[in-house]
Image (cartoon, rainbow, N blue to C red):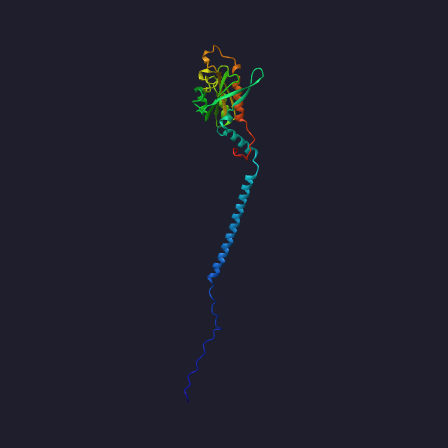
Length: 272
């Protein structure tokens, strides 16, 4: 009898074999998704920045093209007046001829003898006046001398420049005066001009003085006779008539300097 190997028992049944695991998630797909997300964020931020920039441009354009407000026009007008002492040529500040009225109602013309260099607030006026000017912030004093039509009276006009209208107004009321309330005759220093009718008009010749204001400018005048006669040689104070030309000259210069003009924002001298 042939040898037969023992019959082997089949292995126990554990159910169908498990399917092999699928491939691991690809990292590339994850990175692609994140890139798309960041792109969307970048696009959103770009839109926001574009919107903000557009609003800013529209606001700037509107601000540049709109008409100035009344407050802005007033501010520009005041600033233009305050710049006139250095923006205007000297011949515009001190015109060659200035009209004035004499006692009989007849108009005559004072003629400018000359314009002095810009002066220091201490040197261009006498000490009592200089003390008031300097402590109030006087910047400079501009001076010119005129003679009346018959060349008998010389008038030196001094323009003291201050930071603002209120200061100039306060200084006007603080200017030293004589007992009768008129400004002291030793106010703005006389400026003679050789070769003119005002050649002999020096400080000792001054007999009368006035003070006025236009905008931030205090306008002082000193007047005397062109023959060079010192005020000390006059027995008594002369009536105001011979020197009536002085306050009229000062008033006209003060008015021209201080009058506000309607701003023209298209012109370079205006800053609207």
